[in-house]
Structures are given as C-alpha cells and as structure tokens.
Image (tube, rainbow, N blue to C red):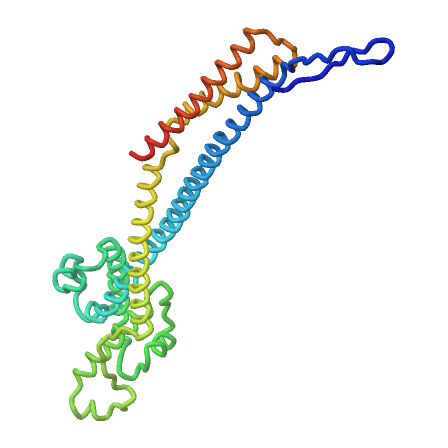
Length: 318
C-alpha cells in the first residue's frame, strides 16, 4: 500500500505527530496499468495474427491473378497458333492437289473431301474458304487459256515469253496456275506430234512433271507450330490446376474464429479497466462506489479475457 507522510511541527520546530495518509490513486493506477498491459498483449497478438492472415490471403489472391493472366495469354496464343496451323495445313493440302485440279475438272468441296481422306482432318471453315478461292482462280485461268489456246505452240517458248510476245494482260489471274495450264496445252500439242517431229524439238523445250512435295522449310514450320501448341496446351493444363488449387485454398481461407468476442472483451476491459480509472483519478472522484465499481468491472474483464483465451484454444483444437 502506498502511503504519504505528513508531519506537524510546533512553533519551536519540534515534531509533534506523524500522520500516515492513504494515497487513493494507487488502486486505480494499478488497475489501469494492468488492464492496458492485458489489452496490449492480447490485442497485439490478435492484430498480428489477423494482419499475417490478411497478407497470406492477399498473396494467394495475387498468385491467382498472375496465373490467370498467364493462362489468358497462353489461351490466346494457343488459339492464334491453332488458326495459323490450320491455315498452313489447308494451304499445304491445296498446293498438293492444285496440279491435279488444274489438269482435270474442278471438283466440288464435298467430292474433294470424299476423295482425299487427309482433308477430313482439316479445319472445315478454312478449307471451304480457301478452296472456293482456289477453284475460282482455276476456273478463271482455264477460261483465259481456252480463249488464247490457238496462240500456244511448242515454239512459243516459256509462259513469260508467250505473254510478252502476245502482249497479254494477266494482272487479274494467278500466274502459277496460268503457267501450269499453258504448259498443259503445250504438252498436249507435243503428244499429238509424230515421233519424228518430237525428235526435232530441242530438249530444252521438253519438260518433266514432278509431283508436289512440301518444301522442307514449310515442313519445319508446321512441326514448329505443332510443337509450340503442344507446349502451350501442357502449360495451360498445369496453370488450370494451379488456379483451381488456389481457388480452393481461398474458398477455405478463414480468419481466427470468435474475433467479435475478442473485441467485446477487450473493449469492456479498456473502457472499465483503463478509461474509468483514468477519469476517476482525473476528477479525484474517490468514492466508495467508484472503487467497488472499478474492482468488479476489472475482475469481470479479467475473467472474460481468460475465458475467451481458453475457449479460443479449445475451438482451434477441434
């Protein structure tokens, strides 16, 4: 117990009586300090836990956003590469059958797919679009060559020589298709000659038709696209699993239970264990009922804190 000494002196300076007076501040000061320490320790621990869990949840959310962004990028890349691959495969297929189409009749798309099994695995939309363009070019070129077939002979030279010699406008036609058709007409006229006439033809004018073979560079490009699409598909699967895992962890994420009760208990102790004693000391309201109220509320708050701690431990163990 804190006490203060007050001495009474008589006029001659001799001490007459020593009176011990109780200091009323010590009780309220002790309760306020104890309450403040309890609120600081428990509140600090809870705050640190909540902040740590909040940072962990934010980290999970950021990881999910990063993976979703990468996943979106890969899906777009895979879609673009798939379209590019489909277009190149259709182009390669059409180039392989262009000579056959030029040399014969132009089949319908249904007939083309029926007679060529490799066409059945191609993108139907792109195949239809590109084949219609090719068929239109072939038909226009055939009509042009038929109109000028009488001007074609073995002495016409190359296709370019023939065009320049006859001053023909081929700007709206496909030159490769026209040249193929021009050579076909020359071959037909060559075959109609007798053996003796064919023997008189310079070897430079005789041609050998070789089957179409996909250039190595195009084969390598097709292989590169297929490999890249396969790599993207594998990474997409991994990222989708990661995103699903993060979604599950975020959905199961939770803060410590009963935080509301912690706020109530610590708030009660702060009000009646810190603020109330401070007001009593400041106003020097050292009444008996004030002392009793402060003691009762302090014990209630103290019991509430330990009850909360015990209950929280039991809850977390479940």
